[in-house]
Amino acid sequence: MKNYNNILTETQDALGIITINRPKQLNALNKETIAELHEAFDDFNKDDNIRVIIVTGSGEKAFVAGADIKEFMNFNAEQGRELAANGQELLFDFVENLDTPVIAAINGFALGGGLELALASHIRIASDNAKIGLPEVSLGVIPGYGGTQRLAQIIGKGRAMEMILSATMIDANTALNYGLVSEVVSQPELLDAAKRKAGQLLKNSPKAQSFAIKAINAAYTRKGFEMEKDLFGQAFATEDFKEGTTAFVERRKPEFTGK
Ligand code: DAK
Image (cartoon, rainbow, N blue to C red):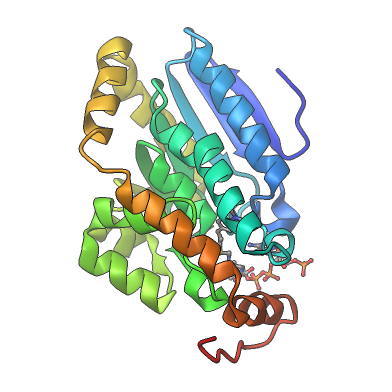
């Protein structure tokens, strides 16, 4: 197994397990973590012995608490658009279109880019302490890694609109009720539950599964994703974005002016 700075990888029989390992930052996704995740997913996907990939977060608090705010707060509009595009290509679109099914085991906060990673995965299960949301508009930006598209695809436009505009978190049982996750278990049981789910997949044809993933994904147009990237870039140029991210770092409530 390769050594990474921000993730851990292991194999157990036909399973490839990826653990995002920045617990002090609640596993927030910085650029390096995104690049490492790309490599790990790519390696497992190319390995014919690996039939299911499980992705989870280390520690008991978070799956992933979003993109790393302290890193992206200083980007300008062009960098924002570019990085959104790169991130989508390297990780979020990449995971969604893998041949090998990916199960996200959501072990705590799944916020912003963290929820977007779970949404790009093919199956989601959660521990009962999970808290799930897209809080981007509270920072003066919009979901930039496919969240405006995939959340609505999975739970419907009305609920997605409410979650994104209110920037509120839902708990694991609400997520189950929305169809955002397919199972909720206690945290100590989560990995076993993910492995049980993987066991159901292992009985079936990998080739047919990869065709099914492609066919299901083909139903959705790319236009919305392109629009999301543009608007995400535009949001980076606003005063509200500076205020929202600065307020987070200064641990105070933002005062948005709408500029
Ligand atoms: N980024 C960086 N650090 C984070 C973080 C994040 N997203 N979330 C938490 N941390 C850090 C905290 O700053 C704190 O660090 P220290 O102060 O100890 O150094 C440490 O993790 C523990 O967090 P808290 O002290 O805040 O823990 P609490 O239990 O009090 O609160 C919380 C937990 C999850 C409610 C809170 O940490 C929180 O609200 N976190 C931020 C959630 C959030 O807004 N996430 C970002 C969503 S926006 C991009 C493309 C897409 C995106 C961005 C860029 N580009 C292409 C550039 C997507 C953006 C998002 O994901």
